[in-house]
Amino acid sequence: MRRTPLMTLLVIMAPVLFLAATNTINANSVQQIDINAHRFSYEPKEITIKKGHPVTLVFHSQDVSHGFVSEEFRVKTDIPKRGVSKVTFTPQNAGDFVGKCAHFCGAGHGEMQLTIHVVE
Image (tube, one colour):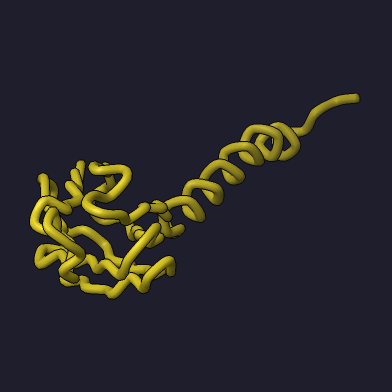
């Protein structure tokens, strides 16, 4: 069977168009990160996300009521006792930022921090 120039072009372009569409879908999707909150820490204690890409942090309380607040990302949420809470944001600046527990949860409350590394 003889290939025409149009057929050759279609064979070459089909994978390219598929990959371009896949990257667009991935670029617009929201990254989700699960975080366990318990006295007196978040697990994981550090996360890395990309500048300009939306992210949802899903907090799971393992014991008492907790909270999460980040001035940099302008988010604050209550995490109910043994419950779940979500915050979604898009980081605009690269750097290292710290979010903290927003509810007094005991003597170690002040140490309850989540470090967020935002990379280019």
